[in-house]
Length: 128
Image (cartoon, rainbow, N blue to C red):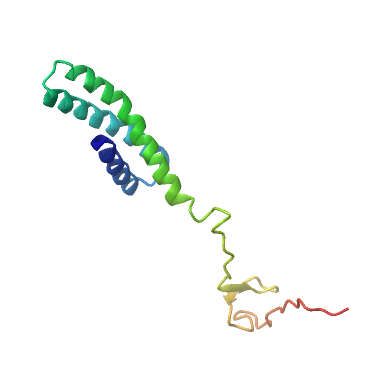
């Protein structure tokens, strides 16, 4: 259990240092191999049996997958939080584009700063 907690913090550290998904996966696999080997070696030596080499090899094969899965979950949680349909909010733009010259103006402006064309008003309540 302690090793999984260490893998979690290792994955969070990797996420904070790498902006690229593939570089993060590669580094989490490599660091998982190293941490799994060290944890297996320490566990075998603490228990005092002669299977520490086997424990180190098992740790080196399992921990890279655990670390990379935790990294993927952290990456997806942080990068796609605002893109879900449940949290989608429509935001108003700070600018409006002039229909004559195409220059962006602040929303509060009523005329274009460049050409002086008045802001186009979209009427939504048009009676028939």
